[in-house]
Length: 139
Ligand code: FES
Ligand code: FES
Image 1 (cartoon, rainbow, N blue to C red):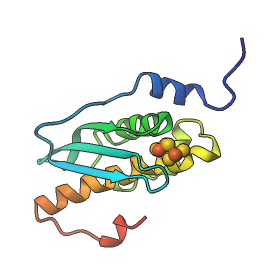
Image 2 (image 1 turned 135 degrees about the vertical axis):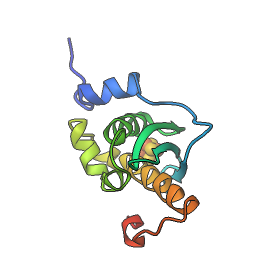
Image 3 (image 1 turned 180 degrees about the vertical axis):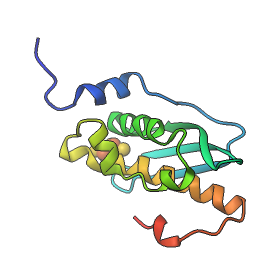
């Protein structure tokens, strides 16, 4: 059988069976970002445990391509249960590594996931009057 040379097994798995897809009606933070290169949109929802400031739940929706779906799916798994400020440190590079790589032409798709997580965290901070370092939100 011919192997798929472009996409790793993990990418195919997360694309075909994405984790944490959907809407969240009672989200504590919602981030929506668009990809300037293709016009695709990503929306990320987070639920925050107020006691320990961890992300207790996360969901995403996207009209993006397969690589955007796979990277968002992996990103949601990587931030679930983490402290909210740890989630802010998640880079698209780390997500791509966790997926065993993406074709070079698809790397920019993974930026959507990172930016959507950051936007959701920022929304949570803004809604709750939490001060933050603005530099963390520059890509
Ligand atoms: Fe179009 Fe990734 S944004 S190929
Ligand atoms: Fe748009 Fe990949 S082609 S996110």
